[in-house]
Length: 180
Image (cartoon, rainbow, N blue to C red; front, side):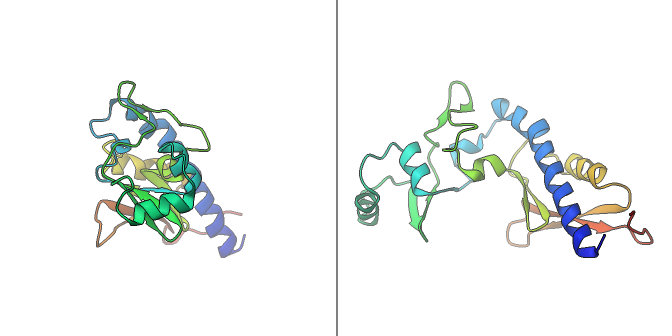
């Protein structure tokens, strides 16, 4: 396998392992989380028009909504930029406080960022957002290391500007050759 093919394979293995960790560890924790991300306190939710319209139950046209938003008459938690909308500072309308769950989980209306947070693949690496109390970095690294196998190690790199974001990358262990 070429080194490019090997990198793509390892990126796929890493992404699958991150998704499995998310399903096995993070999602089951959501119902007992002390600071649910759906409250959008520290997090920003990226939405397209269809998601915004559905979640915030907007009846007017996009053009009318954008005009209202620009004039300061739109929902205070919504900002527009580059054709997208960003929500922050108020509870997501899809969050059921009583049931501590998402009303649109598993539906097309659910934003990608909700499904990806807090562990997601980006450019062949895994990003772990440590603002989520369910993420145990040591356990995640061990989980990923098991998935990629003994010929590789997981290297951690915290973001300089946002140290709660940690990039996890696969590196070949020195002296090991790729198995064919």
